[in-house]
Image 1 (cartoon, rainbow, N blue to C red):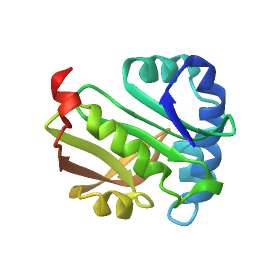
Image 2: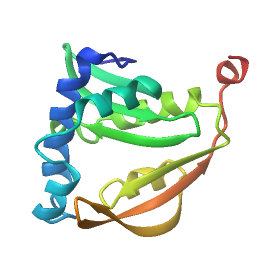
Image 3: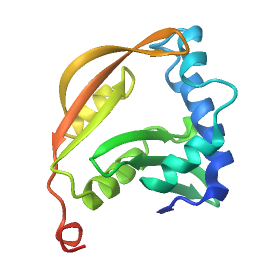
Length: 159
């Protein structure tokens, strides 16, 4: 397993991983209509690439296959974190979060966690600020605003 910075050549694999993960891993908590609104068949690749390029973004690979990714903006907002459906509960999300949290200079880290991801973030010390309904393509989905006080590593403080 290798964790490395995102490059544009990762985009196709990331989008496929995102779509497949949402439609399988999150299927217990969300309806098909909600899953399609959240992870539609087509995604604006330029928009995603621009965000990943601007954010602190990491991918995890195994045998050159992308099995996870995550990104955080400069304010400490953890935008996306997804792990391939066949590699759930193997420490990949933990490795991505550890890297992102250690490299941000933000005092507070914030995430909008899905119903599925909420227990993962609670185990990491995040506190649920509120339950909310968000709209995607006219469809409402439940998620949770969660925050955690950040303790950057010495290397993050020096850069």
